[in-house]
Amino acid sequence: VDELRLDDAFAIHYNEQHFDTTVKKHTDPSDITVNMCISRSEELEGSQVLFFGNEKLVGSSDLPSPSSVDSNVLEDGAKGCFLVTPQAGWATVHWGKHPHLVTSLKKGQRTNVVMTYCFSDKSKSRSMKSDCFQDETLK
Image (cartoon, rainbow, N blue to C red; front, side):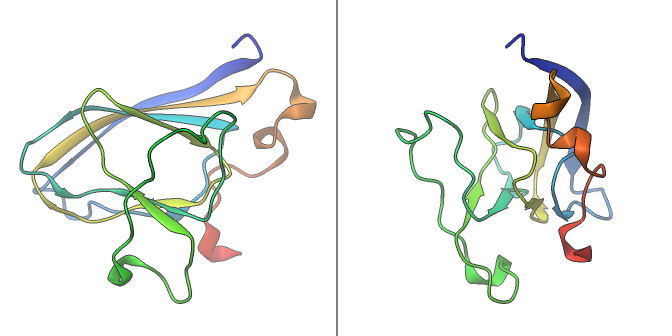
C-alpha cells in the first residue's frame, strides 16, 4: 500500500433526471482505480460498467465470474467483454489501463466514489507516462 498514492477522488451521481447517464469508452489516468458504489435504488436498471477484454488483478482467479454481456451493448466485433452491476457497499478494483464504459441508466439512481491511485515510483507507473483519461475511440 505504501507503493501507491491517491491521485484523485470524486463522487458521481446518476439519476433519471440527467440528460446523459453514460460514460463513453475510456481508460483511467491511474495505475489502479477503485470504484465504490455508496448507494443505489432498489429499482436500478442499467448504469453498469462494461469492461473490454481481460486485465486480471493478482489474486483475482478465485473471484466469481462477471455477468455476460447482452450483444446490443457491444461495439462492432467486441469480444471478451463483461459487465459489473453496482452493489451498494461493494467496490470494483481495476487497472487504470483497462478500457471500460458506463451503460445508460434506464431507471433509478446510484452514487459512486471513484479513487484513482498511481504507483509512487514513477518508473513503475503507466499513468505517469501517458495522457490523462484516454478515449479509446480516438486511437
